[in-house]
Amino acid sequence: MAKSQQTYSKREKEKKRLKKREEKLKRKEERKAEAKEGGGGIPFAYVDANGNLTDTPPDPTEREEIDASTIEIGIPKKEDIEEEEVDPVHKGRVAFFDTSKGFGFINDLEDQEKYFCHVSGLIDEIAEGDKVTFELEKGQKGWNAVKVTLEK
Image 1 (tube, helix red, strand yellow):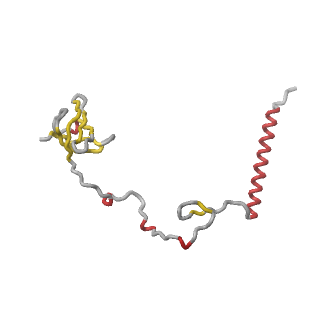
Image 2 (tube, helix red, strand yellow):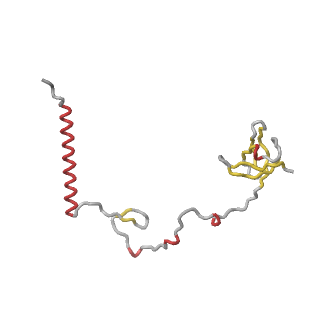
């Protein structure tokens, strides 16, 4: 005669699972009964003038009317932003330039910033220590010096 495949631990797990299912159904029925009676449910929450949640409704006399047409959504237009006029031509000194690799760095004489310079942005040939004039262009990693010419 063959043994039963049902072990003690399997039977206990099955009993627990059934008991859990019955408790869940019982709670579900209780919630349905409370909903029919009108009790329970979710209480109302209000937001006061300071943005805090309260259980009391706000005073309608303190209500402030806002004109929806004055609300701007999005990025401000270019003409709205005031841009300071900046001279596009900067003066600087070549701090480092490697002709074999084709790049170097130029220090701006006004603000002592260091800008990357590639051989493709050169008009005249430059060497370390030369005074140069250049324009700035936004690159992948920051500002690059372009249209680099020797200062006369």
